[in-house]
Amino acid sequence: MKKLLISFFLLSFIACQQTTEVSKNNPPALTKAEAEEIAQDLIQGAFDDIWSAMDSTKIWKYHTNDFLICENGMVWNNDSIVNYQNSVKQQGSIPVRKNRFDFFKVEHTDDVIWMAYHNYASITPENGPASNYSWLESAVAIKKNDEWKIQIMHSTFNGNR
Image 1 (tube, rainbow, N blue to C red):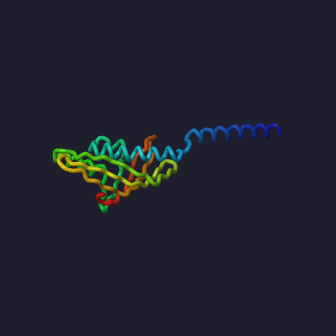
Image 2: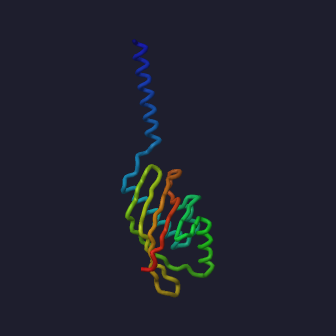
Image 3: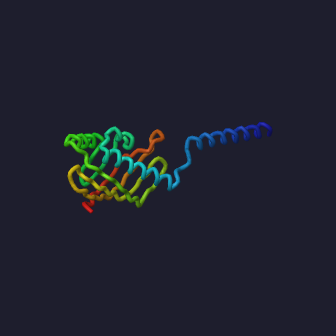
């Protein structure tokens, strides 16, 4: 009986230790507000740094290596974005672009956040009036190495406003 009790206590102790280790490896899930903040910061930052500032060095801050944008029948990746930026820069002036977003859905599961939002941009060329555009977009961000990055976006151009 004594051996049985000792075995029971040892097994209970080992089981508790394993539970503790598992909980250390699985941090608590994000709250809805935290997921929304991450989604909004990623999208706002990516558009401000990559599409407004045309800073190709920021692509890796916001995008995964296998990032894609599916936009109105076209597929963009990190390389095609850099090529586009280079062609705009070769033209001599970068238009001023101001971005605004209206998020209407953000969901979070483990290491994935998906979001849907309206994208509004005011784009002003160097010697011209501002034009206003809008898109309906969705994006998926994943967490790798404790960093959230956008893996894929889908964009539908709504036209001028």
